[in-house]
Image (cartoon, rainbow, N blue to C red):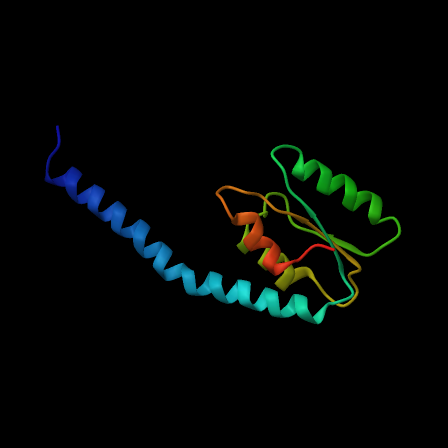
Length: 123
């Protein structure tokens, strides 16, 4: 039975969802902006981007393991394959010692890979 309590709960949930997006947007935007600027300072880092429907994480781990035997390699974390996840890795893990950055780019909606690659253009 639908009553005033149910209506208030739905209204509150919807409002919280909207406000969360509004509140977090500036933080996400700043994180992405910082990552783009940081990547510009590391022109020597080779970027390998991996995308696709299946096997992205496995391929990233295999490639990182192989390349790590000869190079200083950083890769995106487990399932941090969104634009904000990639930006966080750039801001927190990349430094002047890194030679190769292996990026897993997931596509949950149209245009997401393109946005992610604006942070880390692959070589």
